[in-house]
Image (cartoon, rainbow, N blue to C red):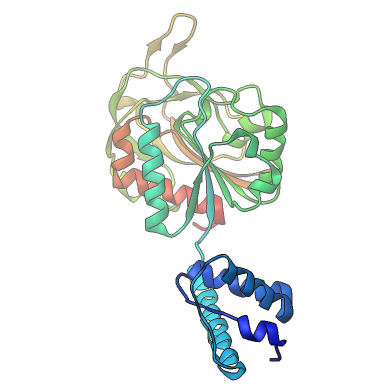
Amino acid sequence: MELSGSYQRSLPLIYLRSEKFVKEIYEHYIKFGNENFWRFLVSLKKSGLTFILPKNEIMCQKKILTLLLVQLFFLSWALAQQKQFKALLVTTTKGWHHESLHYGVIAIKDLAVRNFFDVVLFEDPNSFTDKFLEQFQVVIFLNTTGDIFDSAQQKVMERFIESGKGFVGIHSASDTEYDWDWYTKLVGRMFNIHPVIQTAKLKVFDDKFPGLQGFANGKLWTEEWYEFGPEKISDLHYILGVDEATYNPKVDWGKKKGEGMGQMHPLAWYHDYDGGRSFYTALGHLPTNFSDPAFLNHLYAGILWAATGKK
């Protein structure tokens, strides 16, 4: 490793103060090569950072080699820590705003920590682009309501699913984007009406789908029981429902009335759609839902399947 006289006299060795700093140094070495790398180090020295000046070229070689070996260790460590998948959490509301929304965000972030995946809260509407979505494997609609995307954003979402990725809808995700035909098929069925909040017994339709263990044997659950409109697509796999004999499904909103859905009243389902995967659960109206282990297990099973296809 030969250095010109001026670079040899001023070449610094940087204290390894943080993993991020070490990675940046190594990235500059790979990107710019030996000569420009020395210039980069000198510029850092001039910026006022703390350095150890090597006494001779051999010592310099050994210390720089040590620096790069440490970096390789960090790179290996980073690869070993790669998360299972990355989720985008959308909470936009243009209609009713659920009190449970805040609790849902906290719960899903906690699920991410406990199950080793990344979750990013969607905050900037202008960032919803093809490029931005490349990093995610699943988009989660948490208690969204109303028309939340413009036509360009709708196309971005469609291409995301077409690329083989996943969608999860929670509770009022079925009360969102009624006029977007593609989305209504993605969800599968849309919200129609609901009676007052009541306690009722749950029914497991398909115990082969994971995450339903906590709902077995007619578990009592207090919820805002959604009554849904007709199927928007025919391949829905129903996994969970409610027993209408255990609550009063009748409701009258004046122009709209509800009589229930009968013996087959679904609450959660999944299906393959347009090249990707879609999971929906109608549970999640009450803030307390998001601290219930049975519901969180159900929710994570849906997220995992939508993101990876694993069940």
